[in-house]
Amino acid sequence: MKILKTRLLGIISLAAFIFTGNVNAQADRQNNSRFGIKGGLNVSNLIANDVNNNSGKLGFNGGLFLRIALTENISFQPELLYSMKGSELQYHNDFVNGTARFSLNYIDIPILAVINLSRRVNVHGGLYVASLTNVHIKNEADIDAFDFEKELNKDDFEPIDYGLVIGLGGDFDKVSLGIRYEYGLKTVGKEQTFSGQSYRFPDARNSTFQFYLGISIL
Image 1 (cartoon, rainbow, N blue to C red):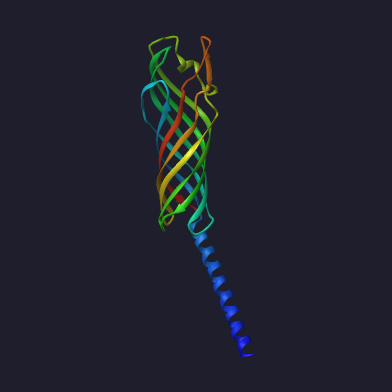
Image 2 (cartoon, rainbow, N blue to C red):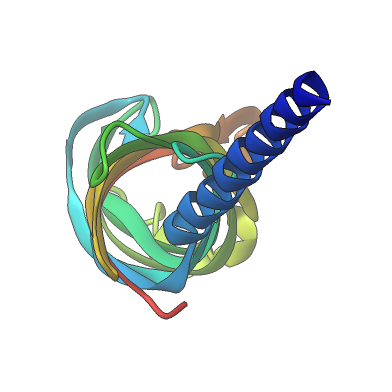
């Protein structure tokens, strides 16, 4: 009987230990889960061919984020953002020389994995997919016939963009802040034909640094 009681107490103690560990793990996961709004500054550029010089463009990013804790240190984070991108390009090719200013606005959907390096600091990375919402163009060319400011519109740009994301963030109670980089993998200009030759204008991919501040609602 004494041996039975000892074994029974051991089983109860083990069960209590496992239950407590599961409760604590669930609490940790719940504390790491967040839903909220975020916004910040974009410093964007276009990585382009046939360009002598390009200049960064300032813009805005803002929207919603949801962080789902999978473990105490690893989370899954999808976001829905409005993101203003673009650049100023000084171009030179066989047809024309000039300067173009592109403003490309997207609905961005980053899909991220978040890894906590400490209680407050995390690294995150993954993929983004973006849908082009509108385009604004300014152009100064040395050939009047090359007036794409009037001729080009949203239909001349790829409607979908996608690429890679990597960043560093910090969490302070209900406030999150950080910096990340988006590297586009798709050329933003659609293929065109001029004088029997095919080209893309702009033959460029998005490149964007984002500085953000997030506030958790739940």
